[in-house]
Image (cartoon, rainbow, N blue to C red; front, side, top):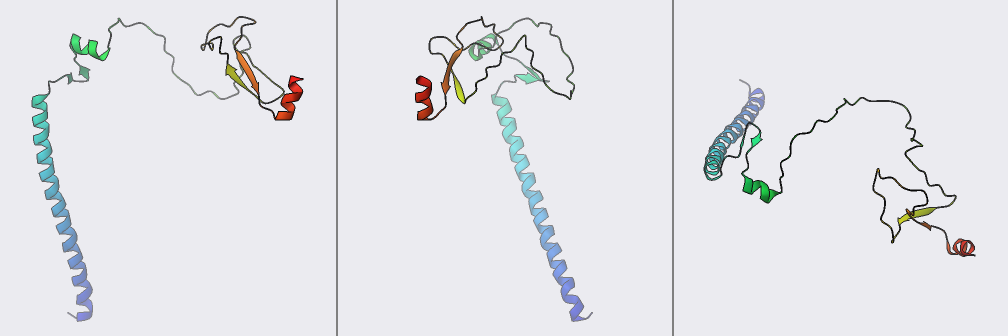
Amino acid sequence: MNRRFAFPFFKWLAALVALGSLLVGAYLVHGVMQGERSEEAKGESDDAPERARNGVVKLDAEQARRLGIEEEPAQAVSWAQRLPVYGRVVANPQATVEARSPFARTLRADPDAPWPAPAKWVRAGQVLGRVDIRVGPQERLDLQA
């Protein structure tokens, strides 16, 4: 064999031997670590009581009370499959209210009355909050006058 052709052959052979030894070393380390993990898992399972099997968690009355879990009977609910709908969303004028202003403002909660909860009825004339106008000092003086 010619020396010119032998050198690349030995270079690739050395690279393959190095790569193979790395893979064998990684496999051996993986086997040792897997054995240690199985021993640790066996030790932990002996100490802790089994509470879950087949997706069912078992709690006694004391544990449920301490965790704040209460039991109640199941209730029937209506369910409808969700479907994508394309179009424009139009607000229901019977159920919503819009507050418009010709100038920039911020709606803040009234300190004397609580903020209404979502889906709660509001009477006509009920104070919902106060409007803070966001204007400069000159415009603020004009509005106060």
